[in-house]
Length: 259
Ligand code: ADP
Image (cartoon, helix red, strand yellow):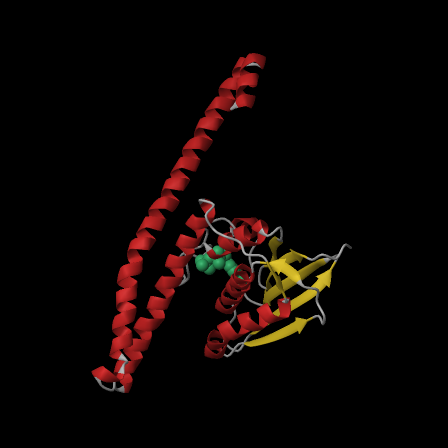
C-alpha cells in the first residue's frame, strides 16, 4: 500500500491501475481465506459423523455382535475403505487450513532418509499388492543425515507414492530413489503412467487443482500441502513429466554438507 501511495504522486493513471489491481487481489485473497475457513469448518463438523461410522463398523466386526458371513464382511470392508478415504480428505483440508493460519508446528529432527523411505513403503504396501505393482528402489548408501520434520517428509513421500500408484496400471512398476547431489538429498518417485503436460505441471501444486475431475481421487490438496511442508523446511519440490511416458515427482532436502 505504501508503494501505491508513492505511485499516486508519480503518475495518476498508473496509481489508478495499481489501486484497482490491489483491490482485486485483496478481494481474491479474502474469498480464498473464506473458502479455506469454510472448508475447515465443514471438515471439522464431518469428523464426528465419520468417527461414529468408524465406531459402528468396529462394533459390527467385534465378537459381541456375532460373526459376519463373507458377503456381510465384504460390505463392512467397503464401508471401512470409503470411511478411510473421507477421513484422509478431512485431514488434508484441516492440515491446509492449519498451514495457512500459521499454526502448524515443525519439529526438526536428525533423520535417516532411508528409514523414512522404508516406512513409506510399508504404508503403501497394501495398495501395491492390490494392483500387483512392483516398486524398484535405489537408495544410495550412507546418505547424510537431514534435519527435517520427518512426519511431513513421510507424508509427502506417501502422497507421491499414492498418486503414482493411482496412475500406474495393474502389474506396472514404480521407481523410487534417494541420492546425494550437490549437497542435497534428492528423493524421486517415478511412475510410467499417463504423464502431465508442461502447462499443468506447475498448476498441480496449487490447491484444489485436479486435472481429471471425473476420476475417483482426492481433494486436489495433496501436492499443495506437500509443497507447503517441503518449502517450510527450506527444501524444494517439483515434477518432471512427459505425456505418455510418466512422471517423476521429486524433493530436494538440504544437508549440512556444502557442495
Ligand atoms: P489429489 O488428492 O486429487 O490426487 P494432488 O494434489 O495429490 O491431489 O494431485 C493433484 C492432481 O495432479 C491430481 O488430481 C492429478 O490430476 C495430478 N497428478 C498427481 N500425481 C500424478 C501422477 N503421478 N500422474 C499424473 N497426474 C498426477
